[in-house]
Figure: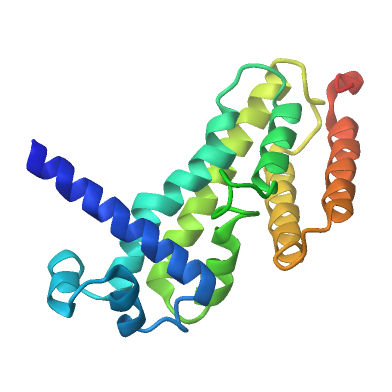
Length: 205
């Protein structure tokens, strides 16, 4: 039991450090030597845990990126209240820079999706599957919102979910090197207007 716990702690530490490295430099700009230096590991010790650099990154996706995306954007959707203000709050929180949200500022997933597009089909699929989980949960909570009378009956929930994800990823790109609070404020205000337009009888204040 203690041995398994130590192994999990070691894997978490290695993956957390790796995520930081890849987020800063990019996957393809990071060599195995860079990784070994940052992790303070020998090549033998690295291969004891991972089959390759690609396997290392897949472990990071499975152990960390999924958790971060779930905590920021999926978990808040587990509600039976009006989903629209809750979705809005989750997006605003995920775009908020700060100590607690430093690594996830805006959403690292978008950076990696762009980097691996047409370069690595396997990793791209892993990343797109994370987006799919978010999309499925968005559609589910929006449909429940329609049933509960929070969202207008004619609204296409799949279309709304697609718009939310696309607009958010676009804003993430705009904010990549820009902490302009006005830009984020304008985005959130426009989302509020949009959500009011799809709410049932203007249930959003």
